[in-house]
Length: 175
Ligand SMILES: [Zn+2]
Image (cartoon, rainbow, N blue to C red; front, side, top):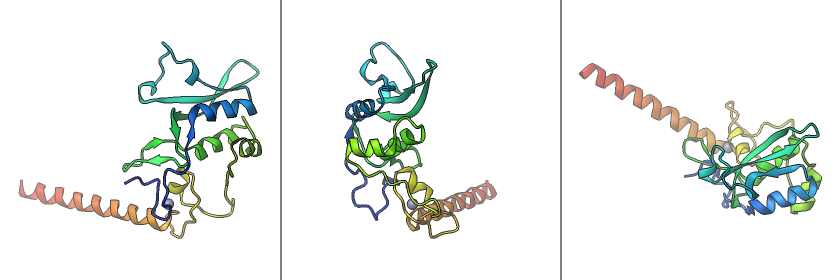
């Protein structure tokens, strides 16, 4: 099961954007944005074998700033999280949010270019952090700051860890 997709959302992958379209669209907004996607021959970088590349923005002083890593091919709308909390694929909502925070492109320009609505949320509301990783805004109703679904998962993990510790203790006594 992918934790990035709580059961309240019946379409966890969302509407994908092809990575080359994402890069060319962003470059039309700001030509200083680039990635190694178009010219990767012979150039090695970490994650290349897994299809991961990086979005950069060039500065006027000749240096570049990293915006975000992403997988080439179809980029899901929401970040896909594995069972151990590891990111399998970053979603375009999370990537665009980074582009905006890096000031490489404005939210308005991205929304217009890609015909999307980039919801950034209400600053006074506590949203579930795990849902936020996958680009979704789900209000937190727990002291842990998690949504109902993720709070259940967290308790399950805790219970399992306690049980494992008890088993280990019992085994230790037997030996
Ligand atoms: Zn959640």
